Length: 165
Length: 281
Image 1 (cartoon, rainbow over the protein chains, first blue to last red):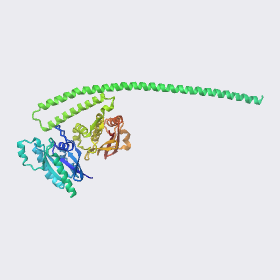
Image 2: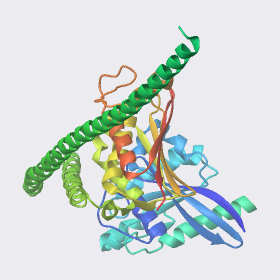
Image 3: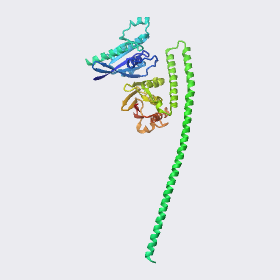
Image 4: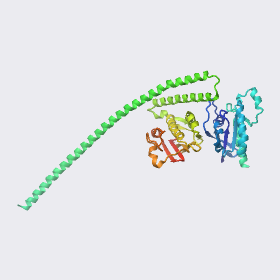
């Protein structure tokens, strides 16, 4: 069976749930204990798409690293980027949109980039209203697992489709 | 004088001498044997005395560790209590204060955990097997890095952890924590000041061994002149005044004691690569 490696980077401010999303997707676990990620953590999840075994290398990049000038180095070679925001902190959405428009759409314009709004389990009625103004690709909850598998699977399929076509 | 008689006499004398010589040789061998026995006895006595001294030192050290770990528990519990009170009493704190408070609480809880592990290690000192546990390396390294968070932030070192090849294996948690903590601490201390400081921690599994590699792009070591100093007690390399010269000695001793070895590649000005090799269980 053919096996390929694909790099997916997770970006977003501190506390939006990047590590929790990875843990939910890779280990099917969730913990309420929050510990800020230090540096970069690489995890792996193997998925089967058609006849191909895809090793997704998930680069969970600490929120504070987006401010470092050299963080571009770690995005090199990425096949996909997830920009993650916290559903109950609108400023985290604004921050990833700035990142997308001012940086990623220029330096990484050929890389699949999707916006995730995480922590859907915490959304209240008024928040549901302001979310309507946001443009996002997936609404997920690392806590309940809602849409997590689906978002990663879709990303893997898109990447594979582009590389084989 | 009859020449034949003289020859006979001489022969007799030679015979007598040979007998005397044989006797002496026998006595000499007997004496040598006795001397060897005495030497062995002396050595045995010395070893026994040293043994007794070591047992005494060991007991004192054990007692000291018990007292130290026990006496540290109470002030740490106190600090934890005051931090909880402080958190309750804070009125409208800014996020930075709340973040510092969170890390303070985390560090205290980690210190309590280390003391708990040390106490367990002491209790099980006669049976190493009891200390053998499944290690989740990601969690262990996360805990070590979090404990050093302020140093990491100050030094600007970027840590990249890749345990995708192997993350769980059996080893001794207290020992591995100390081994990795010392190597990581060194990597931060000797990180590059001018370049983009980076430390990569990766794992590999090869046959019946787990390899944990810690690679930095720091100041490096001139191994041609310093190799013997790297693992020596109170020895410091690169004319460094900051280190205590204990860390790497501890690492080596722990690996010797718990099974494993350390490999080092380094180049002055380019960085170092430490590989901890432990049996895969």
